[in-house]
Image 1: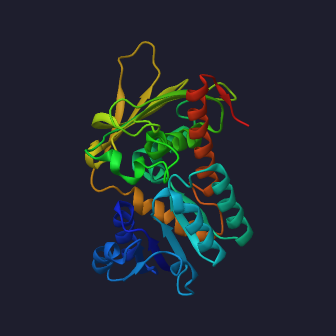
Image 2 (image 1 turned 180 degrees about the vertical axis):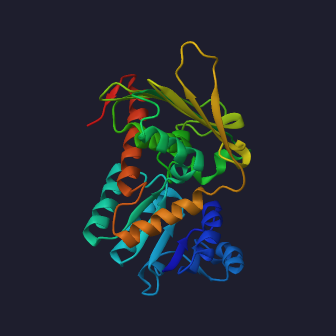
Length: 334
């Protein structure tokens, strides 16, 4: 498998070493808008450096394209790559708009190629173990979920491409909160009703939000609440699902979020409160495990975990939150 990475920023720096070390994979080229931006990482990885993306996606010696660019060209790069016979892993959010995502998925279906959205949070070990327990029925019937996910911004954020409405279609909910939305869809299923609020109180990025709050309800009445923040002055990740028989809580994601921990508790009205705690130390393995899943999906000719459709549905839910915040009403998903 010969791989091209389009974009040479943080995500490329996370993904390139994994590909470089993977058996039967060859990182062939890393490109950026300007070749000079790609050269340091390409030199470190021992591969070509390039400029732009148009020539790369047509190369016959490339089998897989990783799209690690700003959001506004996700659709163009991904569609062109698939039309030229390449499997695609595209960072989240999948695209800026629902129609762009639908076009990407249609091309994947027409070509029979694998399209994956970069939802690496599904592959954090504590999340993975929590999902196993949930699927085994250890929590009983699901009742509700909560997620607080925040980052301590940075000076000059308002000047970055993530704050440019010509490039992105949403603020903190689309940038980071979309991971929480995807996780709750994975655990609880599709949501029927959505409501929420957004605010911009610190960073000068309006009409984009630096904080978002949402409530999502499934057709069976299970409710998930999410707060996604760019002004969480100490980085925080807490993901919880409560069932009739017990609960799971994941804290931390490694790095600046602290060691990843899984808390497992059982309902007991009379005994002292007790929890089993699993702590996952060491480097963040989610990028490696997501790559493993992507490769396996290609080899097995199946939809990957965190598929293009998952990316589309997450965008639909973020847009519904924005609509609810604007109209002051609950949105019913179609």
